[in-house]
Image (cartoon, rainbow, N blue to C red; front, side, top):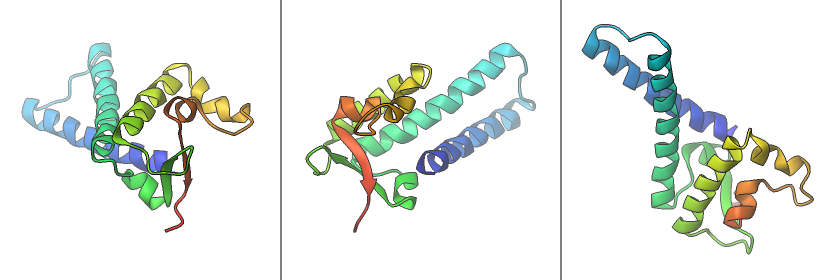
Length: 127
């Protein structure tokens, strides 16, 4: 749920970008190159949205809404460095045909690749 909410926000940012392009040019360019650029813009907005939260060390709106938080394996608040590692490892999890996201199905601790790489995981926010 949190990831879908965050993706929706990034989608809204992409929509505003496309609206700006449409208003500036008078039309949206079509064709494979344009569609690839739109997809790249959507991915970039999602990545930048997540990276912004890493820099500030805060949970995203999606995590806040789902009452989830990221903690270290020791139960402490993760450092900004660990959050950045988690973000980049999440990209690897998705880029590997999504295998890193499916990994918890086979992992005895139910952790994904980015959990293991960053030494962090999601837990319910008890506050």
